[in-house]
Image (cartoon, rainbow, N blue to C red):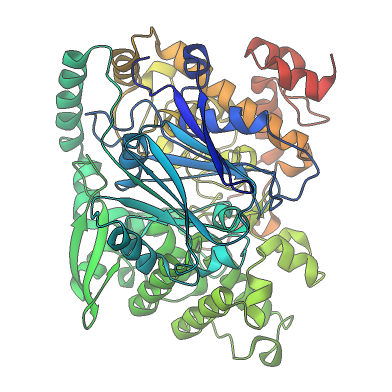
Length: 610
């Protein structure tokens, strides 16, 4: 098989056994790879009603056919399972070197079940797998864990994906960190890893599947690098990272502040330019990426280099808490990287605590300190309390929905969809983005259809997904659904979301790697299959139409900024979206006919009967 090893590694941690799981070419062609292939593997191992942290629930790490190839911006992998935070479908992706090493170890991915009787780590290299003792690593932060595993194996080229204290303590939005501070951040999959007593996965090697047409792949790779380097957004990412968007976001009303109740703040203090002016900033890139959007702050403290915050993190620990102090934003980000916390969920939960304190729901005695908007030192202290599971940190570690329920608050003030906290793009500024949040496969997610990019002027001509009035709701459903399906393929192929490569080029690349005959229509159909498969998983776990919506705190019109008075018409967009998707308006399930059309016959039987 071209482009694939044709096998996953299946690991049973309870019995400490490993075996090969063969993949047929038909299976690969149907599900591509990454998060989509993970969904197919998890579907067959799913037990609705089981605690997400139960040993029998699987965790899957998966690469895609692009991973490990000469193509640029393809060092990505997906990790998936039932989300400990939401109880529904969960997935996250990360870049760096680890995806290349995982595929280079000789497998396309790993299926992990069971629970080890003590801390372990998984070592993969040269087509061989070992389950090794990790007692000495338990309690170590992610940076120390990566360093010690490399030293233990005397192999600095090993790449390690691991958890920190948050994953070990089963914090519901713990993440998995690799290559210093790269993170598979969302959905709490670090807690799933921790529940299995799996501290890390270490991967090494350079075993690459042969492409069907290596000459063609070389030509396509060269053209892609040229297109990426000539893209103006790529230049901005290289210079300022994702923080290059901050001032534009505030001008557009797209950067939420004061727990989603404001959109105007002192933006000049938290931009990419401000970061460069305040610190010595170095760039770093994922393997094979010509952009290098990653930031490293040199000597942030004497002798300590740290990963710089990206846009989502800077907004969550910054303006969302009315904090514009870069030192505390950087420190909060570093703590999350070191101990394995999703910075979006952590920042939103902390901002919610500030909001509740202002409302008089929380007091100084409960919190252990005053929560005054804009106090960056308090933001840092609350991150520490979450990591250490101390005091108010226990409540904050459960997510905003659980916080609202425990405090007997209106769930409409919990900034989340399906239990996953809202990202830092305001739904009132881009109505198509509001719809993507409401219907995305894993809950509130700005990457499962980053529709704000479309209405900023980007377009996908092959699917006629074109910019329109950003604060209008009518007519957004079909293009938003198509864009979701298309972007779901990035996490299957696997490809960085910042890649500007066009649909036709992607099909040519996939075909040159595999020898298949994908065209834009087939690729979109594969994306539609992916979205519906993940939806069917969540339906089996309890998702209904009532879960498709935005919380009141993120919908109520603001009285300032560019989105002044704007409110997405969710009913109109959802009805049109359901009609386009062929989802049942009463139940929220894909129709039986749609599932059969997409060759998801088992899902059709499970949701509707034989």
